[in-house]
Amino acid sequence: MLTPVPVFPEMRAQLRTYHSIPSLQARQDPNAYKQLQDAPRLKSILKGASEDSDQPNTIEKIRLSPLPRTNPVNLIFVLQQYAPKISELHFYPPRDFFDLVMRSTLSSRSRARAFLWLIWWYLESDFSEDAALHNPFGPGQVGEGTEGLPLKVPPFEHLTEEQATAENLDTEEEIAYGEMKRRERKRKQSSAHWLRFHKLMDVVQVYSRRTRQLLHR
Image (tube, rainbow, N blue to C red):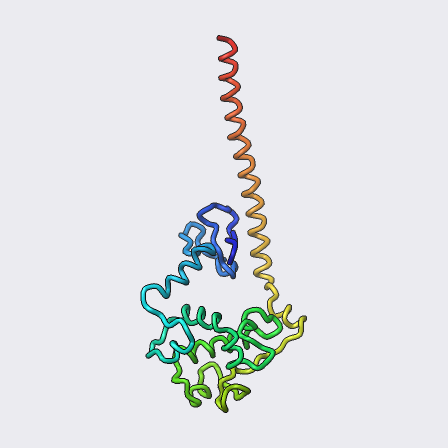
């Protein structure tokens, strides 16, 4: 999220928007207003979700807060801030909280399930054994550091490097869409180049006429 990613062929300034999944912008009305923002604005929007009210800023404060304890955005910020503690309590070594995002050799489905398990646990549960076993995203597991409670996230599905690569292959439709946009971008670049060239030539002609007028005075 450090750099805006332009994904529109026109490359206009107002269309320089960030989107982690550009394919979600497919088949949109090209004249419609784009609600997506670039990275700095996205960060401000996310932080703004916690500014209107006093939100708990530690895991312990979240646990002691009445429902609704906090909002999902603030919870994610707190979870990453306390990642070592979350990893120790909810993950079997060598897995940790950041594997939910960084470890491509764990299936996307099992990582998403573990992430949602954590979100539900801290937002909706009463932190009881029954809640851990009846989490809508799967029963928790007993492990070291849980004091006999099923507080570990559901098991991950491990993938080989080849399986991880195959899991995220572009479809034929996506490849065709990308190629179409590449050609469109090339055409617009070419058109923009000739437009700038003609404008430059107009300026040159104006200055040439003025120069000739000055010389003949």
